Length: 62
Image (tube, rainbow, N blue to C red; front, side, top):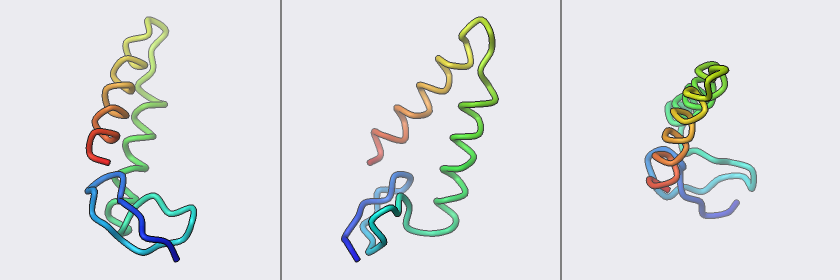
């Protein structure tokens, strides 16, 4: 197991190589963010801009 940093809450945790989050709660939050990025996309591109802001917010936490 490797020492990792949660993408949502930035806490340190020991997890598998492919783990991105520390708890099921953080994993669900990441899933909701990804869902919103995909489903909020509009032909005008407004959803993509909004999704990019969400991804940026998650990356700033990490």
